[in-house]
Length: 496
Image 1 (tube, rainbow, N blue to C red):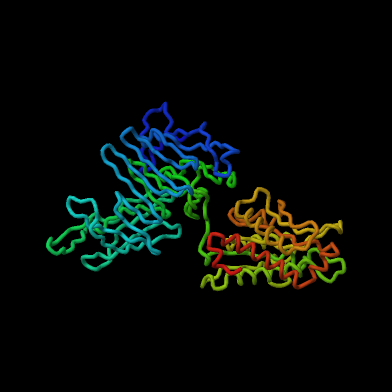
Image 2 (spheres, one colour):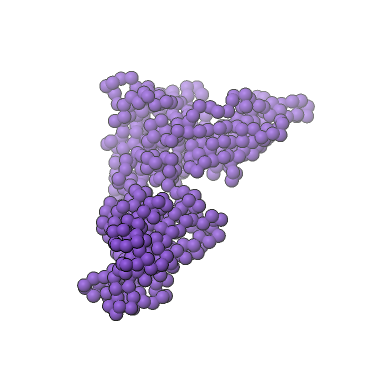
C-alpha cells in the first residue's frame, strides 16, 4: 500500500495517521465484468474506494466500474452520469450550498445549462454569453476560435486566440508537464487573462461580458479532462480515472488479462514519454510514420545457402530473398500516398551475400545489429524449413520465449495473413523458440521468424519454386507488418 509520499510536489499528503493506509480498495466488491457476462460471471474489480490524502471517504462505482459518486463529506460530493456505452454525460459538484452541473454532449459542454465551448478540428470555440442582470438565460452568445498546439502525446501545450479588443493573437494558456502528468508552474501571467470583452448595446451602452480569454476548457494532459473540483485532481480517461500525482489509475485495467506482465494500475505501461494512454485501457507507443523502421531479413546468403531443395535447383537463401523483396514492395504499396515521408524499410541483404562477411555466427550478429542500430520497430526474419520427415508440411511463425506484446500482435497478424495464402496440409502454426535473431532484439522491437514451408516436402518444393506463390507469401507478410505497426492509424486510409 502506498504510504506518505511527502516528497512529491503537488501530492496532497492529507493522511497524517501512521495507523491508516492512504488508500483503500474494494477487495471484496464483486461486480459483473461486462454486459455479455452479466448472467454468467462475476469478477473482482479492486478499485480505490477511499483516498485519505484527498479526504475522499467513499467512491461508489457502477457495473462498468465507473465512479457514480465521489464523497468527501455529507456536504461535499461529486455525482456522475453515463450513457449505456459508458460515455460520461454529466457531472454534478455539490460543495455545501454551492452546486455546479456540467453536461457533456458530443464535445459540447454546458455549465448550468449555458454553453461554454464546443470543438473544432484544431481546438475549440470558446463561448462568452451575454446574460442580462437578474436573468439566468443568455440573451446572445459571442464566439472565439481557440487553437491548441499539442505535442507528440496529444498534450495541449499552448492555447491561443485572437483578442477581440485588439485583433492580436493572445496566449490563453500554456502548460508543460512532468512525465506522468504533473503540471509545471503557471507560465501565462495573470494580467494576460484579465482582458474583457466589451460590446456596445443599443440603449444600454457598454456591456462587459464574461472574460473572453478565460475558459472552462479543462482538457489538457493527453487531451483528457482534468478534474480539480473539491481537490480531486484526477484526469478523467474514458474507462478509468488517473491520479497524476502518483502516476497510477484508481481502478483495474479492463484489459488486464491481455497485459498480465504489468501492474493493473500502471499508466501508459510506465512509459509515459514513449506512448500515450488509450482511453485508460492500453498504452499506444505509436510513433510518427516518418520514424517507423521495419527490418526485413532474408535468411542465410553468401557462404551459407541454408536448406537445399532435393533436386538441388534452389536453396533457402534464394527463396527468402525473393519473398523479402515482395514483402518490401507490398509494404511500400500499402503505404503509398499515405505519407509524404514513407517509413524506413531496411533489408539485411539485397543480394546473395552474408551480412556478417563469413560464418553463421557473424551472420546472425550482423542481422541483429542492423535492427538495433536502426532502432527497428519491427523485425521479420524469413526462412525455409527442412526436415528428415518429408511429410512435414506447414508454415510456422516463431516468437522468442515470453515475447513482448508487439511481437505477439505481429505473430498473430502473420498467422492470420499467411493462413489466407499458404498451401499446406498442416496449416500455419505459431510457436516459441530461442532463435538468436529474435531473442537478441531490443526489448520493444516486434520480432518474428517465419518459416514459410518445408523445402524437403515434395509439394512444398514445387510451390516454393513458383514465382506467383512466393509473391503471395511476400504480400501476406507485408500486410501483417502494416496491419500491426500502423494499427493506431485509420486503416481505411491505408490501401488494401
